[in-house]
Length: 199
Ligand SMILES: [Zn+2]
Image (cartoon, rainbow, N blue to C red):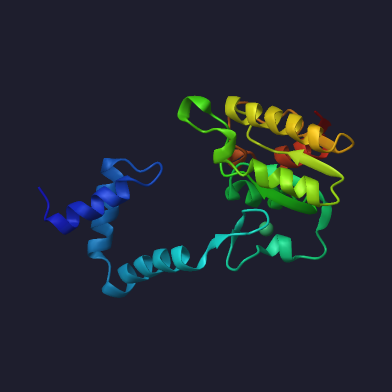
């Protein structure tokens, strides 16, 4: 139906989250109508982000160098670590202004059914930080979903084995069950943080 380059663009857009065939087609036509300058700015932004942004070598948050801004910030409490599933969760928690520690981004949640086992996440690296560091508290802020809860329990047990005296906490309830942190509003997430409990 379309010339191959147009079909290719539609196919690429349809791979984006939340974009169905219809929207993919609309986006492709938007690009076709745009000036060369506008359209290439989009292509260039994608190219640049893939080239310049990597993962922090300490916490696996997004970083435009070896370490992310939070790990480089001396004012952030190094004894307090918040464990999240994805870099987008760091943004959600930062927006609450309730947390002044550092992060550890797992890269997902345990889901044996989908083939996601502990070795596929950055759990070993978290345990290394627990062994090496001067941790006082680890706040587990995985999503309040089945996989997020399973991940929290797994990590809490692992951390207790390494550092029995470490305080391991979980965000308080009040977060919508089954939803991603990403979609929690700042106030709810902030309260969940303030009311975290020991697991
Ligand atoms: Zn970092």
